Image (cartoon, rainbow, N blue to C red; front, side):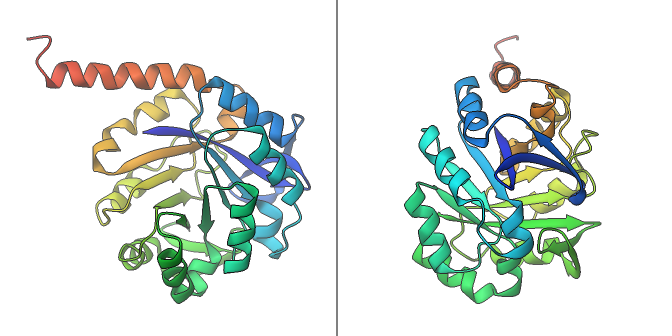
Length: 255
């Protein structure tokens, strides 16, 4: 299970929201590309970017920052926010982006996702953001009656790289993850899953390790890192120790 640090972009700055509410925006001083480089130096193996402006308006106004991040790091980058066409995907790939996340467009045009996941196998991630189990779209500003689990079942037949599932009620709260929701997704798909929302401590990360063998590939963390609740270096050390302990016990090293 990988810890994947998040960079949410608005007006070229790193920001964090509380439960996806644009009115709760909090800016952070470090430039996005500097933040990404710092996290890479701490041991991050991936970077997660969300273009919040594009998610809201569909307009790619943060491309300068995206390009700077891509040039600053040597680890894979996944990005979401307002990605609604093959042209935009190819443009992002040209910047050096590894994978793209389709959220609103995936829900509103499933055939497009099916087509693009065939054209770019292993490069398309489907992002499903849910509130009380139902999907939200367009930067979480619109609520649907579509169940997240139904979408996961449907998209699991496509050639996508992974799902990113976010519980909006926990996002930015630092109060812990919705394990029940995460587990309900893992139970219905063989596609790797990345969870997002609510991580506020290393204990929250450790509580998700049990899902690693069920297909939980990673956990996206943002606010906890920005507010120095723990570092990537600290978390990776603890996660590595946890895996080693499980390995030792499972192989009777302590018998």
